[in-house]
Image 1 (tube, rainbow, N blue to C red):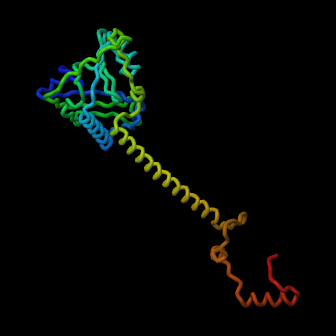
Image 2 (image 1 turned 90 degrees about the vertical axis):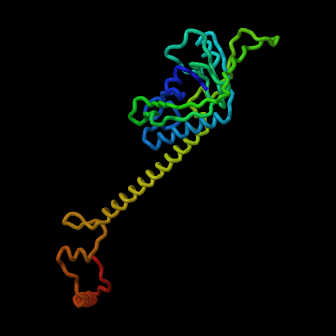
Image 3 (image 1 turned 180 degrees about the vertical axis):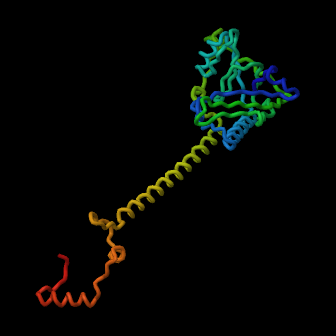
Length: 279
């Protein structure tokens, strides 16, 4: 929607442009999406961006244009939704506005609506995303090719505020900026869908990690239980579940044979002992 000959005609006959975004640190501390530079994530993000832009073109959204005497006046009338410029313009400032999408200072003429563009195609080989947990700056640099409709028209400047007599006055126009433009919330449907996919994937990964941790804990408990049940018999300790067959084998002793057991029983009974027991 923002046509600047200085930017677009350098690759003549193609109209091209580029923009960059600073998204905080790491994987995008200044946005809702998690920005990572692996191949799959980059392609998902660029695809969502291109699909979203195509939909905006098809919707033929009107682009309003406003003029202000100073950059400070423009910032005030846009509720601070404009990007803070390091070198703000000293002359009159033009602001273009698409309801619910963006308020920005264009660098050239502005088309009347989004449908006056035939297409915007991303040049993927020239797009660059930097985003990982160790990144000092998370960045998105996008280059694109624009095809403009033959019937494209420049957006007319919106008139000033009206006074009590219904006539235009000198007061600058205040744009009713939506709350979403003052936050880092995702505005496009495609971005929201991508966020849902990221959240679903993260939940699945957390569930797998939790299951693995539970399995490890169970295995450790079984090992601890087995260790606590292990038979220990030495001159100082008797613990665990005693396996008498194993005890006889390990110590090289023998079980009392049945004939000897019978003799002991006979002697015990003759002395008034009716039941054998441990002493």
